[in-house]
Image 1 (cartoon, rainbow, N blue to C red):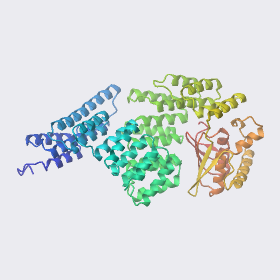
Image 2: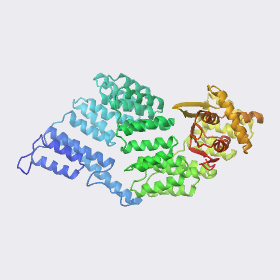
Image 3: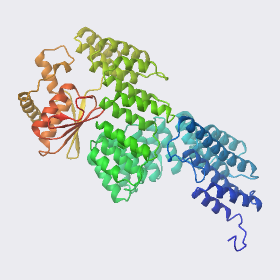
Image 4: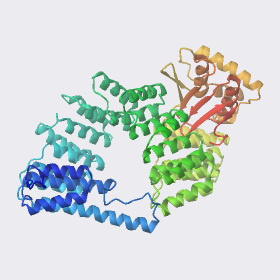
Length: 622
């Protein structure tokens, strides 16, 4: 157009600036800006808004990964700590430059409309400049410019980030007074904000009051339920969305997959996988990463690896999912090999990647390797350890029996240890029968978290194992007085697309008589093979026969017997348990796997156990 001698006007430049932002070419955008100034069009409202939008987009690109011509190339070898720091400073300087560009354009505009204000507010909010965004909202009100639905949906994520439900409610009230509350975007932002503040009832109320619901509002409420642990409700809402003829988007599957992973509903996960393939989402890296995570957590690590290997591109999420999957299944060396491949692929590890590595080392007793990675994380990648890293390392030392070292490690953390980190060590004290240290550790826990149910239960069990029945009884009486109740040991098994729940000692299942007979026969068979009940795992002061009976009715044994009588011979059996598999059940199931010639997969609260031919994948180290 310019070659023909035709000058661009105020109708042309907004489209050209939008194109510059889309192709991520900052230098071209700056050249166009120069052309606008030379032609005297920088005072035009629409052109000014387009400039604001472009610079805000480049600002966002700088914060979230870089744009063409100004990106850190991390693929040519990872930088050392000082190099990393220098380049981080350079990146911050570039981001500040983009911020200045947005501010300068905004300040030089002789006239500003709601779009101008919204562009700057949204740009600041999206780039973590929360105080600046809120200041701009106040200024907007001071010049008698009324915030609209877009303004509100831009600032609500700030209160979600700050977990400030009170301020979020004020915005909600403003939206109701100005009749913005029926807007889809406002509704979705309110749902997200309340969910982040753990007020899921308010999220549901907002969703139910929406006069119309689009895919964004459906996805918001599904994600809200899943992130707050309401997995069944999330799945129910997903089904309702399909029945309402709302087509799922890629984010729909990423939101719902964690529910399948947590509930270990493999059949539902497979159904969703089929829907993903039919819907043409099979190449989406985020969905594939969710599938990898789901299959790994539902006990099928082979399917997880197959999906991962078929992915054309791997991002940080997919790498971390497959590494953690192998770690939880006890394939430590595979997990560490994948971590090295990730580094060679030019993907920089993050916090979660290292947690996956420490988990892999923990489940295989690789203490030296874990220390090397721990030091590497801080020195080479500039990642400061957080509570999860410390917890994983404490768990590793505890499992390895290095209890005193674990105590020193936790005591010398640069951040205050939580009750859950001390509980990791307390659990190790129970396994390694170190009563003296257990009492020291429990005192630390009760100082920080006097209502810690798990710690009381563990101490009661530790006293019982040491035959200190009076101390065990005192602990239980204290719990009763305080109203502290431990969660019962539960096991779940999925048969013919129905989940069956078993509680230790429970006789309520309709097939209990058949389950009891099958289990009795199995135990007689394995006793002939050399199984001896480990009554040390019974923490009650009762006769030996009574202890054997209590072991007999453990929840995982009941679930296993039901699985054997309810499924065809030779098929794999998958069971989930809410607490650690006990030593006696672990031994018994090894024998049973050999007798029934089946693979038995049990997921407890820390890892997977694959029993086959009388052996377990954990190598009796868990």
